[in-house]
Amino acid sequence: MKMLLLAACVACAFAAPACAVPFVPAADDVVLERLPERTDPSLKRLRAARLALANDPRNLALAAAVARRAIEASRENGDPRYLGMAEAALAPWWHEVAPPPAARVLRATIRQSQHDFDGALADLDALLRADPSDGQALLTRATVLAVRGRYDDALRDCAGLAGRTMPLVIAACRATPLSLGGAADAAYRELTDLLARPGVDAGVRVWALTLAAEIAARGSAPAAAESHFRAALALDPRDAYLKAAYADWLLDADRPADALAVVRRDERNDALLLRIALAEQRLPDEAAAFAAHRAALAERFAAARQRGDSLHRREEARYRLAIERDAPGAMSLALANWDVQREPADRRILVEAADAAGDTRVAHRLAEWDRRARVDVARAADRP
Image (cartoon, rainbow, N blue to C red):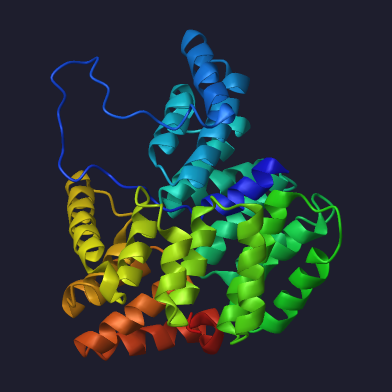
């Protein structure tokens, strides 16, 4: 169950900051930064497991345990270095054409987190050819397919989960493709009916509450959306995706001070730093902080480009448009991002950037895609 949930949550992971200016240490033993192991016992256990794995690197069971916890830590902390740990744990099998299933599904999850959706789907397709009943692979593939806008295919994989996991997981799997494909009210009712039942795992509940909040927000139900966001945040105040989604909703509701309160202490995470700056931009008393955070974002995006990191395109497009007022630059980034992922937030920044740049071709392109994908345009607009 934990990995089933993890497969879905990792798709929404936010990248954490890189250093603004590359720094080359003078010696190998220079400590650049300490990860938050002292305050998280599970990270201490991860470190111990990594040390054990170093002495037995082909121990697949141990490698899988290390990779799972590292992927989880990346989602919780918004720090992509943990994804590097996960990949390193799988190093003996990473480049194999047909690695063992336990390594392959984790490789797919890591690739998914890195936006290598084609690579992830190749691994997941192979796993499901070998075992069509693999629930973990079904949920992970459904998540990737939904991100790519292949809603009918995603729903077929969700249907394959029947009898393999709890009903709320299946409802959460179905929620995005249903809500964006013309059945938002049905998806919302299914989620909220199952959320009312007792005894649901806290992690699954946070996931489902976040989905319910997003559907309610797209359906112009502000009281319900905020109720779901608050309930989810009370259960997991560290979830980066949840905090970003709630902050965006508050910004749309013209409540920048409340948005800032949600993300104020999350400067390490690029996606959350963007929300901090967007909130500060609207608050006169935060002018000095906004200037500093604006500069930090510019440096981080520049560093990401130097590394060839394309994970930040949606965030950088939004930064370009809302903060730097660079509509052509924002549209270029949004178009490149749209070629990779097609969630409501991706659509929104593309439409807004194209409108600001005065480009009408994007509207025609989206209309054709909407027709082929049978998208509920009103629900996919990602507006309050």
